[in-house]
Image (cartoon, rainbow, N blue to C red):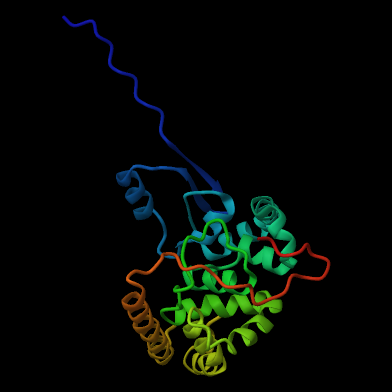
Length: 249
């Protein structure tokens, strides 16, 4: 008869918390357990990456009103963490920009636009200035950025005048067409700020800019032999806020 004791089960590498009717996952949950958690969620629950980022969690799922309460409760603390992560670079941003980094709705294109206009690269963004908005959903996040950080709007106007810069030509063309894109989006999806929707006309317009960028990248690759990824950002297009420190190298 064997006297060997069974090996102790390893402690789970994740934990789950409940707040405001939302389920918050920290750590790495096995796939099977994660699928069971998702199957047990209500059809009205939303998996929200931005709230997860604010909380330093792996995932957050819950009802829209609960997620909104979590966002409101955690914004101040998240802004403090963003300032600590950015260090001296945080002085170049106004409070609205810090708030957007902490609590705004974000995607690759809105993060690219933020970096392009401010010269400050968010810690969690690893893309390049090739990250143009692919569809109306991504343009929506870019529009929210400019609404929530009004100081960046003058940078967009400067960007529209940079069509002669080979590294900015596509973003500059998109900035130049910004009013037309917004009018089309408002026509097709008037409730874009807070309700789901589609804007196929906007998607088609954005595809044109992406095709231009693809053609430009191919041409540059042919001339240079290879592209360097990610491409460097040019000088920021929005000056530092009044009283901020000088530009960092």
